[in-house]
Amino acid sequence: MNPRTAAVFETARHEGRAALIGYLPAGFPTVDASIELIQTMFAGGVDLVEVGLPYSDPLMDGPAIQQAVETALAAGVTTTDVMRVVSEVAPAENQAVVVMSYWNPIERYGQSRFANDLHAAGGSGVITPDLIPEESGEWIEATNAAGIDRTFLVAPSSTDARIDRVASACTGFVYAASTMGVTGARDQVSSAAPELVARVRPFTDAPIGVGLGVSSARQAADIAGYANAVIVGSAFVRRILDSPDIDSAKAAVRDFAAELAAGVRAGGSLR
Image (cartoon, rainbow, N blue to C red):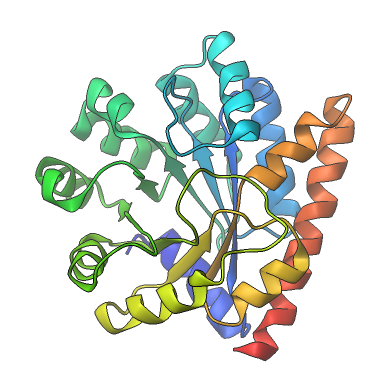
């Protein structure tokens, strides 16, 4: 595991809580604003930020993230801009930045080039929601050589054999998608999430993060009772979309991050 990723989970373990992971597309609403907002997420209590690489065919993303990504793409945001965002965020020692990207942009950019450039920018890993381990031989070599983490996804529909294969290929954390379908804040996180985490545990010692649908401190606390990380994306994006200007967006993001951070700490008593 990349040292920065390891530090995030070691700090959370030492404090008896789950890690808090947030998501924001690079370049939304602008490149500079996305840097400020990610820094605000960290200041509010987020431990690790997924920087989204804008892509024109985001199969897993719901309306809020699609709207944010379309804004970034319309402004011409590129993979080079994503690397710039990662490099300028400068998280603290117990924080980390990873990139969340569909596979096509990485393949176009060049797998080794992407891994090496991300490492040079200070990123600690990559989440690839549409890549499966069976098709990732070159990617595994590239990430191993660059010293950055790989995170793949499991879902409630995954068989035990699939969970074993995916978990074995992860070097960062395992991303457990709480529900089938697209991203989006929900009033209730799928009841399948605790069972999925329990099914993953026998196959790995790596941390397990739960995402898709988390929108409140109460949900964060519930997930923190059984998972190693709580992942929140659309709810952050929605607060930015609903804000009239960047200062209001930063305030909303900071307050929401603080609420979620309190939630994962409250959930520590449930672990």
